[in-house]
Length: 364
Image 1: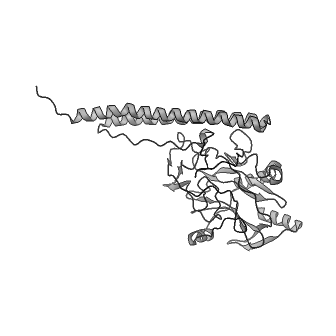
Image 2: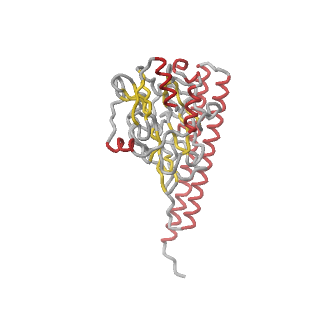
Image 3: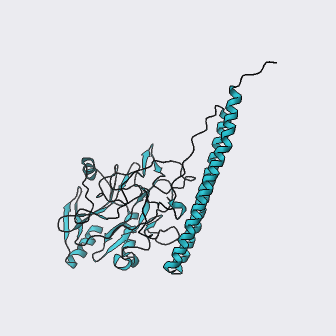
């Protein structure tokens, strides 16, 4: 129905509409002669709960203008399913919109670097194991004190590219592999009702239209579908920065920009009680530092929200970002020092314990 509504709009406007055969019924493919804008740079809101999958933001077309559909967290429709993002591809005479879908594997999404695990080819945001989704905290923003099915796996990707379409002049030159082509024809599910309502809400929001925001939508990502207001909704950031594979800035501005902490190796002194004691000390410190990160992030989000309500000018916003950068870096340095101090505190005891246990007993 949603595709049909688009098609009727295009036909009335005299715009090209292509009909393609689907596996179940005929569908309407949206095609536009104007290339979509570049992808905005933004930060990923924290995952709202276990089982949520990140669906990156994208530019959609309403028959007259492109509008930004903010990235958001969505509950997977069933265990074992992943999200393949939508993309625009040059069809020889126009840009054709390829809708996203849910399926057992991530298919082809045009080679578009959406960030946050969707770097143009495949997916590195997490994996399904034993009926649960395990989150890769190297690329996704997850509260590890609430969600414990996590792991950390660094990903090396090409330099950040913000091009939002495949093929044509200036587009991404990528073609699907055999496996990706097979994934597109396997059984999969369309966007769920929450995603459909999320896109409809974006379409009705004038501020998200490209003609209004000029490629910098005021809301780029949300914690849940349709939540376009509140301090957790992410605004667009400056586009001059470079990004790491996770979408975080190289120069951290906010706690959410920081990479996940590298947990120290599990203690192995040979003494089970001492190992358990050291392990608990490490876990307590990590938990405390995670809570401090979240507290600072919430404080900075509130300040951003306040400045937005006040319509602060660019100079004031820059001053706020400088303040946040200083706060974040100071916290990061303090946390590194705390970790080093704990390791130093444990190391002599480890060595002493090992020496005492290996030393021969004196004769009486």
